[in-house]
View 1 (cartoon, one colour):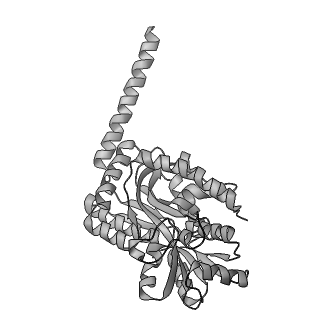
View 2 (spheres, one colour; view 1 turned 90 degrees about the vertical axis):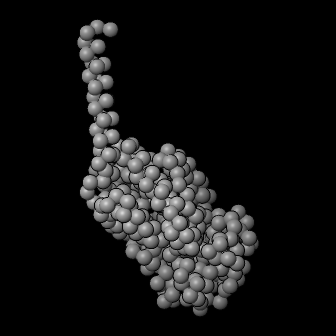
View 3 (cartoon, rainbow, N blue to C red; view 1 turned 60 degrees about the vertical axis):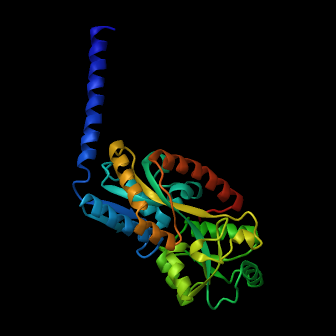
Length: 327
């Protein structure tokens, strides 16, 4: 190796060492200013509930202000786009979910971001299923009755969702495909507005995330007739899965977790991941989430990145099989 090559190698080594040291120093002082969690749906829904729990606990742990910023619209596209374009310093995070991260790439011709390229997974915190809930005025109490009613009244039933491309939307489309029903989709800007519309009788049914609707189910303001996973939920005892009510193979679920812009220093990502893992295991947090129908988990950043990669391919198959498109 000649002198110039040696000098170049030493320069690269020093530069690399400096970058590592900078990242470690940044993590040590992180956070030294307010952190923003971008939530992709309106206040009051499942995403917002989780975001505010995390913001409170992170703020207490870090002695720093954690702001929840609701950026609803486009099925999560607006929020995800903002975070994808944010500085990669750990101070702008996304409370992401399946819709904008795994589903949209197969539904939209051009998404303003690349889920695998533009985001760094931090931690998947919870898994959640949808529950099929109907307005009390709709004369159905199970899936068989719903299918019969829908077929006797083609195109007359309206189902709400928390937005296009959300699992609530996909759950409906897959249900229509597998049962031959013709139920119309009415998107809202979050789970809370959709639940309000259901109670008011503006729509007939909704495939809602459990946390967004469970209190209304327990109060009797709406009626749950099925869950979308493989088994019944402790929070909704007695409500059977759709697949056990005459639609075998039906299964829809989702996850919620924190993502950061790609390029966020790994020590900062690991610091956030460690704190989130501690929070999700707190007895008060865990019990509150379980009561709301969440299943708590805690993954490594690498596991989350792999889930996103795998999930994109799995949802692509579902979407193609159900022949779902966005106009």
